[in-house]
Length: 108
Image (cartoon, rainbow, N blue to C red; front, side, top):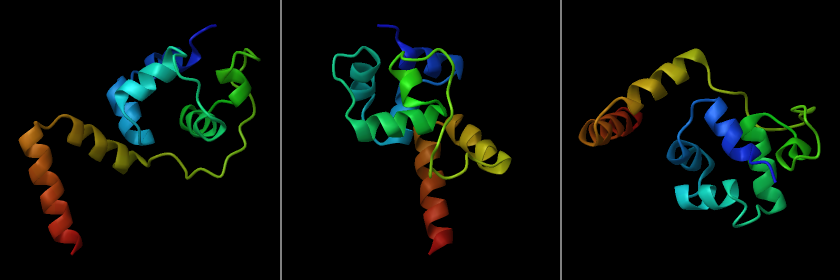
C-alpha cells in the first residue's frame, strides 16, 4: 500500500514528532500508522484526514485526488499563530520552558 500519511507529512515539511504532538499521540504511534503496523481506527482516520485536509479515501488510497473534505475542525492557524509556532520551535528546550511559564503567568 502506498504510504500516503508519510507522503503528506513530508510534502508539508513536517517532522513526525511535530505532527504527533499536534494530534495528541506519540511519534512512535504515528510511525506505526505511517507504516501500517497499526491500522488507525475510524476516529484517528478522521483526525488525520482533517489535519492533512484530505479525504479518508485519499488516505486509504481509494482515490488519487485529495477529495472533498467535510469537517467541523477549527480553522487552520492564523499568520500570527504560525509565526509564534515557528518562533517557539526555534527555541532551545530551556527557552521553551521559560516561554511557557511566562505565558502561563500572563494568562493568570
